Image (cartoon, rainbow, N blue to C red):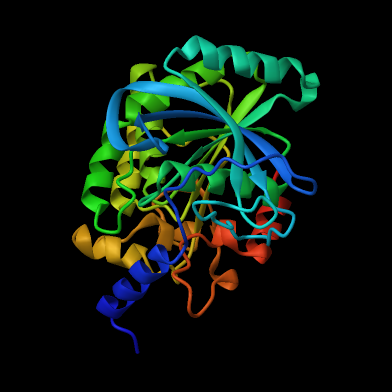
Length: 329
């Protein structure tokens, strides 16, 4: 039987075995590829990789067109090397950034105007621990592609260290990013968009909950009127803290989904680091929570013996099919 220490070593090896995660690779438009334009906001400081791990007090906004290869396999991000082949790996064909939020508003307004009134929705993705900007961007495009989402994709990328040993730094960066995420959601709610959904992964779910809590406290218990739902995937949150956050905001916005699995191999490590606390992403049944505001969806049926099972909702074709079937319910 594997010990927790053994699993931590395996988990770190798995996380480091995914290619040039920090590389933003520019590729030419190529026949057969699929292009997805992702809007983004980030409180990372700009660097040679577009955005790095350094925190910034100024939020940058922008768009990036991500190229998905024709050989793409559902549930996989085919990370590029330093010189990528667009037919074999992810890359970007163009990107634009600005520290003027009005530029973001303008791009969003153009995308809204180009859509039918019944198709003016957005999905905000908040990535998890140990993600570089490029990794978060590629993962967002992979999710949009595999889920065949018709909604406008918006990435919020907080300044994760992008390192295996950067967990404590990442946890602090999450708390420093609450107002920046809230400001992005304010902009979406003030736009001509019909509605938006928030998807948080891993410790990014903590950021989502803190932004929801903060906004509710600021606004007398009210959330954004255009918020259409929240999905927390493998959330790295202490269950007792989750209950406190829920109470502070006067209840969870609806619908509210938690996708978790007791077979997640990374969350027990987080639990040990955080004092042996039960993590929300290990809960598989609503009865394990102190309220019924959240609908828990178990991912255990789609987990694998040799996987860390922390991204099952994005990596398993069976889980993707299940969650696609839940849309609109």
